[in-house]
Image (cartoon, rainbow, N blue to C red; front, side):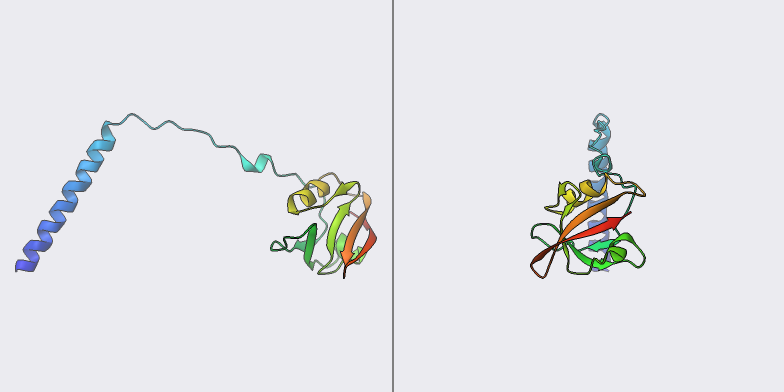
Length: 129
């Protein structure tokens, strides 16, 4: 019986506190809406895909391939898991963002030379999109 009375008293205090907070907020003017920058506007748009799964954990120079999709440009060009893309066409690839920027300039039907590192050796590979 005493436990019930204490429990009721505790609930009453919580309810009073919540009502006080609501009362405080209710007196405040409406919060101003502030637009944040739209991240999607800054991501390059792609008309083509290479058909690779990037290794997002790779922190070296370039973009390391973690997987290659069937019947896509990368597989047709002979790219393999573990290859590190360091150049696409005229663009140097230093990280994921520069890889995306380099890829965004190509259109369906374009072809380019991609420079990769495979087992520490530099190779040029011709890719058609």
